[in-house]
Image (tube, rainbow, N blue to C red):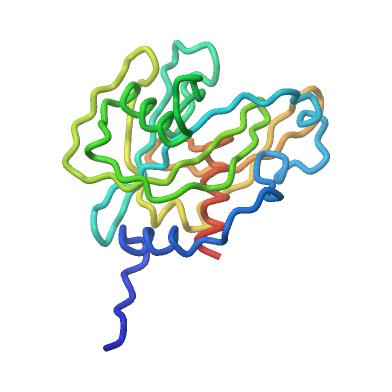
Amino acid sequence: MDQVTPPPFSAEDFRARVAAQPQAHASDDFGDHRFNPGHPRMNQVKALRDAAVLIPVVDHGRDATVLLTKRAEKLRNHSGQVAFPGGTIDATDPSPEAAALRETFEEIGIGQDWIEIIGRMPDYVAGSGYRIAPVLAMVRPGFSLTLNSDEVDAAFEVPLRFLMDPANHTRDSRMWNDLEWFFYEMPYGGQRIWGVTAGIIRTLYERLYP
């Protein structure tokens, strides 16, 4: 019997693509510098701080979504920006996966019982000085959100179909020390998805949806 191909952008299709993604190598080099080759901003990044984020794909069957957060406006760094749940890897975290799960629970209240880790992306180096481990996960629907108001103002879901469509990936730039800095942005539903978050999404697209 022929194997049935799962519908595109379904949770099943995403899981299959993660399982079949190219093997990561130590020489893999992903990050903001890929969109800004030779930019002096990257030369100023010295010791990178290790961080992890969860890429939570919610299993809505044929139409999977990605859960994102909007950082609190009162935060000192990256306030009001759209982000994945995550943060700095603590010394007490046994792995990037553990850090991503801990931060997800602390920020939006989804516990590990709702989350299945299904893989990792290669690390993403951000111009802000972080080496980010993107942890891929399936999230069972039916969860309740408990937002930590000190860190998160909102959480919302975006269709995977939208995020993995390159027609929705717009290149933009802003000035940094009188030099142009390029990034992707993906506006959706009144939210501006841009910067590192959009860069990670773009990298996910390039690896899983070539």
